[in-house]
Length: 277
Image 1 (cartoon, helix red, strand yellow):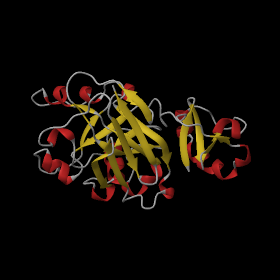
Image 2 (cartoon, rainbow, N blue to C red):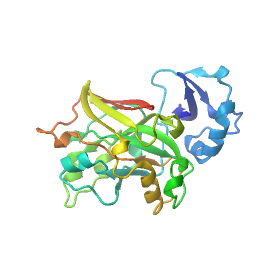
Image 3 (cartoon, rainbow, N blue to C red):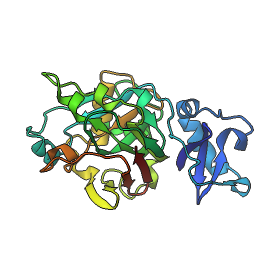
Image 4 (cartoon, rainbow, N blue to C red):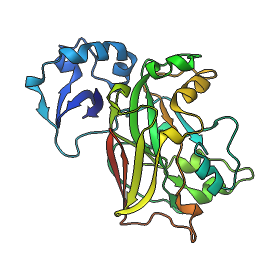
């Protein structure tokens, strides 16, 4: 199943068409995305019964953020060994967790105003919590998720690295710094939920690529570890980490500039686009 939003309402998408879940079920399901994710088991049960003969054509640019207002956003630093190495650190022995504040979350096709400083890219596979829970066993972790989406952990490096020790969250939470989308894809639709390929491009120049098979802490492990401390709520986002190839570790460093376009793709999910001004 492929879940998203159109005009702030939860929809399912198939072959460039969509069904509004509330309207398609005579309001037995809610229209609000967070409310739908809170009833994710009901959504999954209802999806095979939907009447796709009344589906509407999906207009270009109509998809919003699949989770427009997550309550919690978790992000993981240095979760790929080559990225830890390029940053000058040993691979961590436990997940290094920070947050992106929810106000930075936007949809899959947006213009982003660059703040002062040096803005960098970080493609990420993002796990979207469905049922969620507290102290979820690792073997049940995938069942607690709605699925996977594409994300960028945009980061302003001057503010991020100014402190001693540095702090990440504010510098990664400017408006538009948490684009996600275009859809949430359920794990069963992915070729291999434990080896999800991805790549990003800046005006057709390859930037980063990799697979979640190379995560130090895989998706199910992150769900189990995070839920040991925090109850995971429907619609929460988990930015699982970025591989090597970020701009501030290039020689010379390379940062985003006005007029450039960043495209990020995840196999089996789709792509997101950010234009910078």
